[in-house]
Image (cartoon, rainbow, N blue to C red; front, side):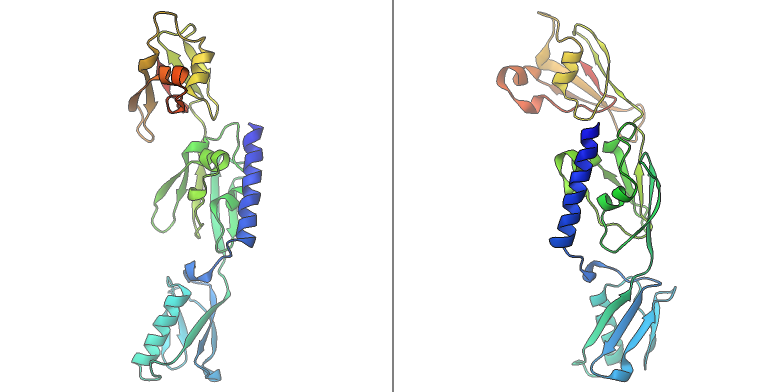
Length: 279
């Protein structure tokens, strides 16, 4: 499993290189919250310049208009909201320019739990992504972690987002490398089902130790191959456990002859832990 660890390190380096040199973090994606400190400039009026922390209720206090809520807004939205308050209050005309900058970011923390090298809580910066946080946690434990069944839990909505770390680390699929938010939890479960069962008309039916990247051809070969003149290899059935529904399975058919005779790799499917292959 060391090759997955090497893939993880290489991918992390590529992501960090891209983050530093190719994709700079932009404040317009960040939402203001309590304990952020912002500066507000209203036109060229020096006595209107303010530096203030955002309070627990999401408000700051500004000259002339007093408390105004900016929590949950982006910088651009906060500028529009503050300008609207000054214009609606009759203090300035619509031509006034309001500029908001983030002087200091609030502390942001993410929890990583489960089968990683160093589970725990980690401080993050705005713009940090999932793979960066996994690096802080020392990476997934390749011997016990179920890389395909990781979950990202968003604090505010309790939304649970499935994460396929195997696809990220091995196939370079960064579509799941989500931007982290304060209070997120990354869960890496244990690989409870560590085998694939091959049964039916094979020479040595039984359990085969599962490994990431195991394909149908590997499983059939480990079972000694088909029984001559008795195996119906064009009608192999795969029974796969349904995630989150114990005791339920999905079933689909694979034409293995298309792979062996015509080199159709779509029929040499990648297996998952817990699969039952019936020949």
